Length: 314
Image 1 (cartoon, rainbow, N blue to C red):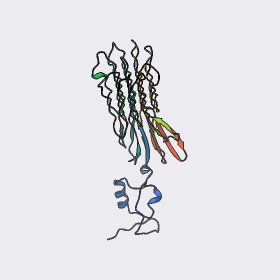
Image 2: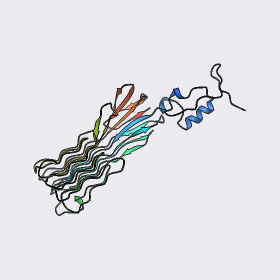
Image 3: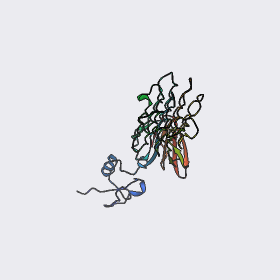
Image 4: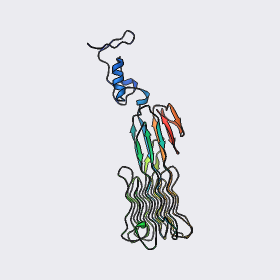
């Protein structure tokens, strides 16, 4: 027997099937409770909780290498996309930046890795922290290599070294020392710069996002250290590599996921720390609950920016 659909005096056998983005205007007609529940079980029924949410998830950048001519730290992984919320609370975790490598007579000389940023529970997205810059240790060894991460760290000064590898879709590899000084860390949009002469390699540039209404670069790699200028951090918060023995490497900018710059080697100084990550969510639906973060509007959309951990429900 064919089920009937009753709302007031309206009866129809041909309502419009819900289609993405599952907003209320695209499921016209009258539906039986059994049919509504069937669509809800597939997260296809038009409710505010099904309105898509755009995301930017940037992990913490890595620290620049310490020791003698340290490499630039890799940027934190950067992910963008859209998810359909389930109505469950989403845990928001913002990753911190890695520490800079220590000077020649201390350890660890490699820069510390950044930590992951993620959405979990009502969504599942994880970006990986940046890989630390290679440490300029004496004698040379594997600690001169860049570390792997969302974007990889650049190598320290030396030959036959291995740059840190980035994760496809999140970032890029670090640069290598090719007869020059230390190399730059990878960024979300560009491989870290190789060092072929006195300057260290530049940090790889990050990528732009306009999720908050303003085109902004995120996830730039840190510059490698050298003996003359030209070893700048990448666009998106990457810290500069330094040329002075009495200066710390430049730190990555907070809440960009930028990698830290490498240090040249003075006792008591360190590579630059990586910049902390950030998570931004944007939707035409307003959150029904939130802990932490800030709410702003861009046109008719709601924008939620998290620079530290919290939770949100749509």
